Structures are given as C-alpha cells and as structure tokens.
Image (cartoon, helix red, strand yellow):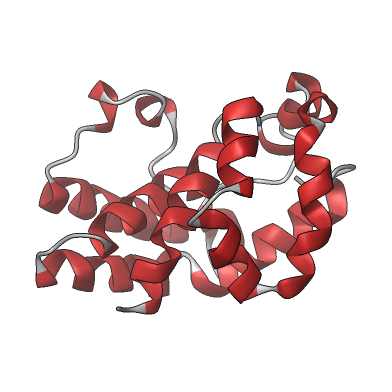
Length: 171
C-alpha cells in the first residue's frame, strides 16, 4: 500500500474541510477510524486536538470565511504557493487538474461544491489525489503521485503553516 493510498481518507477529509465549515459530522469523522489512526501515524501530538473536536461551535462561518474565502485570508490555491510567475503557475496547475478530471472521468460542475472552485484549489486537488490513489487502475495511481508531487507537497505544507498561524482554533 502506497503512502498516498494510506493518506487518501485524510486527503478526502481535508479536501472537504477546505470548502465547507467544520460541522458535527466531520468532527466525528476526524475522531473515528481511519482518520484518527492516520493522523496519529503522521503526528502523535495530534491526540491533543481530540478534545477540541467536540466544540465545533468555535469553528464558525465567519472564521472560516476570514481564513479561506476573503482576500485577506490564506489562499487555498496551489498557484499562490508555487515559485515564480503566479499566472504561469496557475496555468500549469489548471492544466494538470483539467487533465486529472478528464482521466478520472470527473465533472466537478455536477458534483458540488467542486464546480465553484478554482481548478488549482487545494480542496479539489486533494479530492482528486484521494480518488486516484484508491483506484485499482495503475494509471490513476500514477496520476495521484503526479498531482501530489507537482501541486501538493511543500506547497500544501507552506499553506498549512500559514493557515495554522492565521487560525485561532487548531481545527
């Protein structure tokens, strides 16, 4: 089992966290398997977060909008975290995501909330990586690795650090 396949449930959960506010259902999913053990393998210190998962009222719509939607927030787009010219980075990211959507037979316009997102949104990319990495098709799994390497990796880490610094709640 590849690291992306192990990470797939977490990628799928995070993808939804980046496009919708935390609610009771997503908080329960975070405390349940396979997410809990996946997170614990990545960082044992995550155990300190579980008590906060029961208080989802602290993760309100306004805080979510301030962090991820408003221009003053932390950009959830991969191209914002890529070196060099922003337009070239965006064009490159969009081309990769469009190719992935085609290869996976996905039409995000028909699958809310993906249709309203920029093509280089981390939420959409994480969803595609999760789906492709769990596929039985070796070409899909290769696509997952390609997306992860080109658009996630250190860019997602930089985004996560900036998000953590800007947030007033660890979730």
